[in-house]
Length: 614
Image (tube, rainbow, N blue to C red; front, top):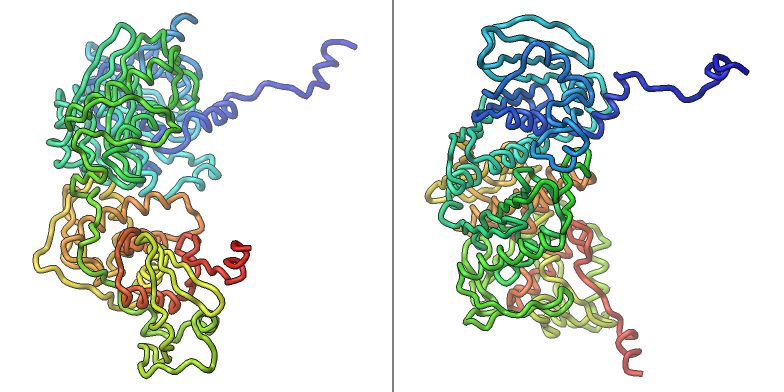
């Protein structure tokens, strides 16, 4: 059989470039923020000191990056869109000492295969520049043009020819937050460069060149950061560690303000992140995340940056030493700030210990991390759920009667509840007991019931918040003085998205310029003075729930509101408060689970108790 005949029966064949580029785009260009990252990397590698990023519709319609870097000549324009064509790698050894942000030559080819690209460029010494258009990998035009020195790349209609990929993009607010984080990473890693970010005609950032790192952080994340940042630097023959740690009082309820860099490149490292957060344990509570930006400098030959298609992960040659030194430097910086004496290291599995240097076990810095004391005022419960709707389902009443009624011989109570049903005297005679200020115990007809006070109240507040969004006129208590609240850019973007629902829940919030909002009214169940904390915590909690596709925006926001305003575990309750809590719980549509389907109560029959004494 001839070779020609064999080729006719071959089932393996090379892919056309337009298909291979789209496959590569699926790995390199996952969402609009991936495009922003690649374009910023190229601009920084080109020696630019001023970068302008323009975004429309969260990158769906337009992503444009303009820089004043070295530009390109006519002969390089087409080559830059060829796959694996690059100016940054000359031989195989260069792969093991990468000093630039981009180097593989995949990005521009991948972007051009799934978008409509217009590139304008001119080298500073050239008299004229060039304009090049390429759509879906197909060249549209190539012509001389009057262009400022540097390069402008405009990416329009991302994934216009890959509809399946476009449909999997998240909401505009979510995609813009990813873009925002990408710009934040570039701006933190390069404080000597100027960055301007414009989104739908709004200027989000206008960061000057040669800006001190503390000032840049304060401008991007809030003025409160400026006086609360701890700078540090330590240099060894192998590694230099420098950066800033935030005072623990600036912790937030969600991740997103933790940054790691190696040789100017942002990267993710789950264990190193865990180690740094662990250092804060003596000052922070569960699910409280501090701001930090840590910059590692190491010989490029000692780190592999080519282990992830999107260059998000790296591999250190001596990972153990990197983690140990970074932990030691960060811990020393925090301990010196708060005058904490060094104590011997303990195993990750050993019980945590507190310093004996005069710090109480429940240190509080005030602000967002401040814990409610047991001596604070009486708990304020929301008004009765569903009081203006039809009675709760009969099954809830039946269950309550089954738990608490002792039979026909019980004397009827002379009092009536709000719903008009009789309250058995035995319920009051029996009383309620609080276990460790967390659980409510009460005797039932055939055993006892244990209620999680936080989960139960969360269910109550959740249903009330949902009900409020359906009312024509929300219940709002007006503040005596309106307050201006400053948000970070990502928080303000989320606030804009959720603003209509917040208004229906009872928040009177007016969106102002400069990532600022004015709040003049809040739902009736919020303590006056706590409105800023509640609103910001709701945004953090909402972000934590974003991956839950079973919940719509209204439910996520109601859960976030309930999580913040529900009575906390560890709060001492009076007998009347405990009784009111149970009364309202059984008036709910779903009293047995909190909004995230965790149980609110457990019934333990007498038989189970007796079996333990046999």
